[in-house]
Length: 238
Length: 302
Image (tube, rainbow over all chains, first blue to last red; front, side, top):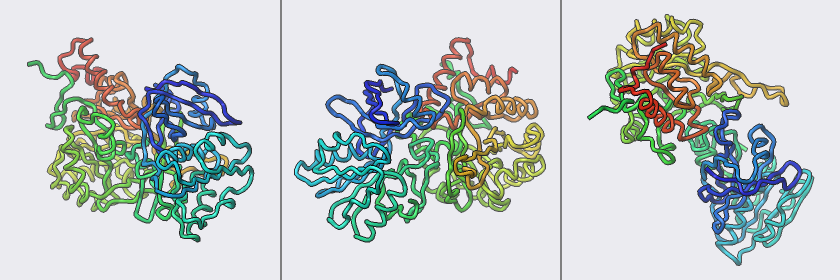
């Protein structure tokens, strides 16, 4: 059982929650967060790691209170308990060399921990971050701590800002149309691109087969075999 | 030495406790073995098998409802042969009783699957005539006493394993189906599988699931499942295994008092992977508080 340290609104419709007591997770992994003992909603909500802080032992999540579960989260106060099962999922691979990171909306959340890990594993590498938002940008300064450059696009198409011919490793997380656009551009430029997928899931551990997506290599479980995939594997599922 | 008050024998199979992982909610044990102590369970029902395996349904597969879960997985499974080669030996290594769940699209599928499973080292065969998510077969066999009895009799004739038939709550007369299965030779029955439900995406003006209808499970169905277990238990003499929305030890006790000899826990494991160990601890504590030498003493007292 984790304990909430902070839980506050950081932008319109976006909350940031830090907890201690969760096992440390990696970039791209997620936790099933659940109000302890709750039967309605019944299931945990898969929420990815925004930041995992080894020094403080805190894990931070960025989430939008849109459904019943996340709306309940937004009402929780520091000191209250929350179930944080996990970390689950494979996480982003940390490839050597230059990195380009593309995020859309709440899909920027797992990319923050990714940029942090990319920086920690190579203080000298170039990391260019492109963040797209529909209404209002958030958590940009958190990215600036680790990235070489951060470019923000509000109300536009963030993938239009990205050059896929740099020979870098590209990482993307965001709404399906954004991932489709990124995949199309990566294919045209023969670039290496990893995408993090989102799908409705029940168990989060690969048992229920509720989040299976059809890939080039057969059915894959987004929660267990993903959520991060080489885009070529899942291009038809995007 | 005093025996464990939770221990029981089900169709000649010794279980260390009456808490069994429900089919379709526990894979073949591999995933949960990494995050909980699966050796504590009384038994594990593997994912529902079909003869040649299946990729499952396209489109949305799960959708949450108040205290419940609709699913339309569509029996995604590796097929009977791969189960026998890789999953059954693994399940056996975990410790709990091993139950294979067999579904089918046709009578021939069921019979060939059951014949092949004679090679598998399993303790029980659970015959799934109640899956609502596959177009042909599945639930179609379990809605009427005559069809349920027919497939039960034929599978029983070819299988060397004790046979537990898993019933559908969508049958009009659950007691009649239970009785028909008993008369056809079933060694036990388990109930209930999921209730046929539906979800609508109002924004898109469409049904959520490609199949339109899907199976409802979770605490939402518990009172109805409990009533059906009670009715079935009063209709037959063979052991009844109860399931449907069990979340706590108290829930498990309700099913046992209503006539179940053992219970299965499914959807709740998704919400809380430790639900079953917690239920087992709760049942042990209950036996101690009530001074029961065996939990079976309270089975069917209602």
